[in-house]
Length: 133
Ligand code: HEM
Image (cartoon, rainbow, N blue to C red):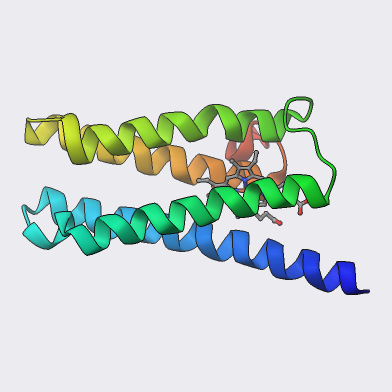
């Protein structure tokens, strides 16, 4: 019983952090494209890092608690494959892209990656939202 409560708390924490991470990225990115200086504010940048670190820690803890090997489970493999892409595209949008068009492209592609990761998690299928097709 205790384990179930512990697992549920962890699971909710992971989902909450995933949602907060995506929402913060979406809002900051929209601010960036609208050339709002607050989107690059150091406090928001730090908050993003803290939330993303928490998200990864809860992911690792879930793997440990459920005794799951992410390298043999296709939906977890897909998450691990798309996650770096999401991070790189996010860095491209916020840091490396100089032209506004490229920033927008990286931002939208990162959001698409994020949405796909959530769909993979919800369907537990490596094809995520494309499963039914
Ligand atoms: C942007 C990154 C991520 C997002 C948005 C995300 C999102 C989610 C969501 C929404 C769920 C709940 C699914 C459900 O119970 O219906 C979930 C569960 C889970 N995620 Fe993540 N996740 C991310 C990264 C990761 C990573 C990197 C791993 C490790 C490979 C991971 C491992 C897990 C595990 C083990 C579960 C629980 C599965 C279960 O309870 O059976 N997640 N994730």
